[in-house]
Length: 256
Image (tube, rainbow, N blue to C red; front, top):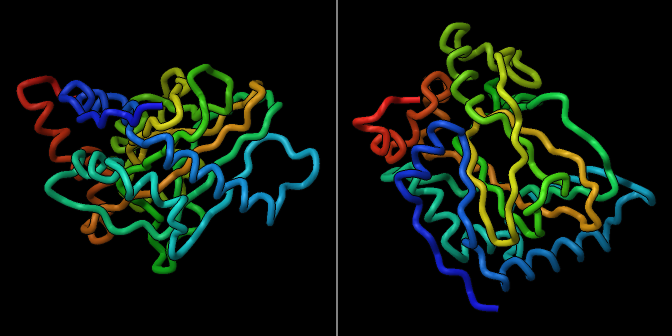
């Protein structure tokens, strides 16, 4: 299988990120890196298998020094560079964990609503565990719906930021699972192995059911700008504050 051609993020995609709160970039991660990550996941599962008969979500948080086979889809290809192209000229802190997100079929399920990450428990200093952007690397085929796909509520990042402007940013700590805002229709994210999701921190999301015959496998990295912690209160009220190239793509057009 030929190696993927590394794409750029187009102005149209930047504007879609501003409007919807997420984009999927096609064929960023090579098949070799995907295969190595899947073998690492299988090895971890062999040492700590799920209980017999488990169906639905299964999460494994790998914290600290990240194993190369799990970190490779972020660091050993264009994923991190593409992510940082959304916040240039800034950069991200080195992530301290990766989430292995599985969804074992059959699990017929429709999420009742979205959630936001990092609210429970809060950080040791009492602030919510906010970050800049979620990077999701698809390891299995989710090109059809109801295959364990991530569900998102497009534009919810804008509604959540508006709520926090009115209520104050510290209200985020009591917004479990998600700020009480009006939501549009959810959308299932479809993708192929090697595709990458970039999603705004405030985007409402949840895991959907899996009625396919394949275990869904995704790696999630929570990326935080190096200056994020000091100004998180401002960031959650101004949803594009950390995304200079996204703002530039909107120049001369109506802002979302």
